[in-house]
Length: 274
Image (cartoon, rainbow, N blue to C red; front, side, top):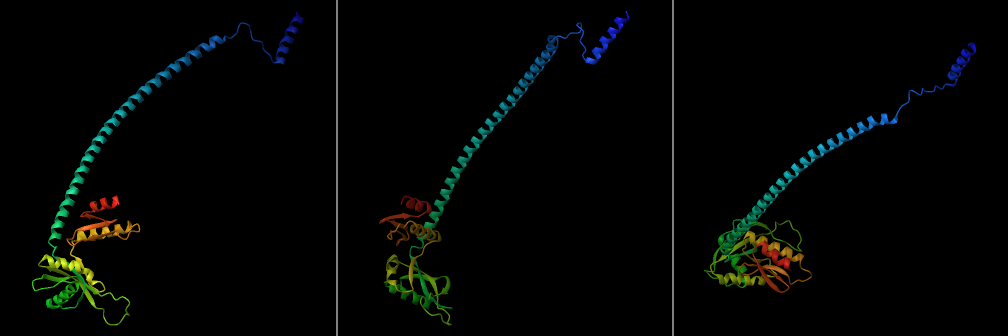
């Protein structure tokens, strides 16, 4: 019996020294019993996530549909506003054309009232000049242009604009004050002498005098615009130019063809075709 106890003690000691404890056959674990609850939990989580995703997707889809509906309504309103704006623009363009047409008609009436008038540039000026003195100077210039001035030829005449120093080309500067010249408007009583004066302006070449038609401000600005634009389109053709005829009508000559214009639109149309 003592021997058995010792061996029993040695057996326990050996088990302690070896550090191994053999499990009892009565305490074994089953992997199936462990995996089943985990799988059940995973399936529940999966179903919950799928349901949550579905609910969120449906919510977002509803919001997106609502936003799309709002966008469609906004687009419809934009289209309506665009249509209204187009109508307003058309009305505005038509009103603008009507205003321009009325302005041209008023200007044409003003220009017609000036049909018997011309402007003579560079007539000598002096302070306290009398009407008799001015008439004598006017008659002298008209005679050089080839106009036979009679007692009933002139209706009225007067200075226009401020006096300015006479241009002195190729002359020495002197201490003496420069001679003053000023423009003079001359209105005839009859058309024939006015026609002669305008046609005879070439007779004044080589003198300081120039005869020009009495244009309204609108027509003069339009003529200057046409001259500037024709210069840019010259293309080496010196026969292209803008001018005003005896009746104060504005025209351009391009490649030998004469085209009349009375508005900026008409001028643009002529030059754009060139």
